[in-house]
Image (cartoon, rainbow, N blue to C red):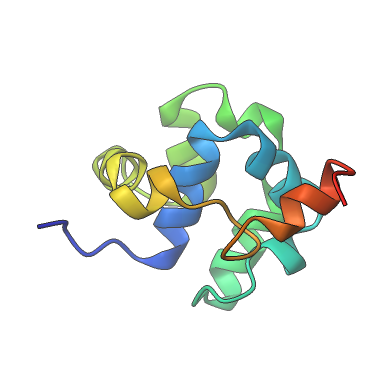
Length: 100
């Protein structure tokens, strides 16, 4: 059984692995995080992320306020590994990539 991982950590865990979702999140966070429960502080932290934030796990932990242990749990969580951000079926990513 998976450990409960907050939505914020799931988003960060997914974009650590998925470059398409990372680009979408950095470009249009207000659309990509729809449906996730985030605080104002978490939204602000996401808006401050850039490509350099993802250079190392320590840098990402610093930028997000998550511990490396929380990041590792989020990165390995099944929901973060298997589900793209933005919509249930990846519609946003398809639009972003011009596939529609």
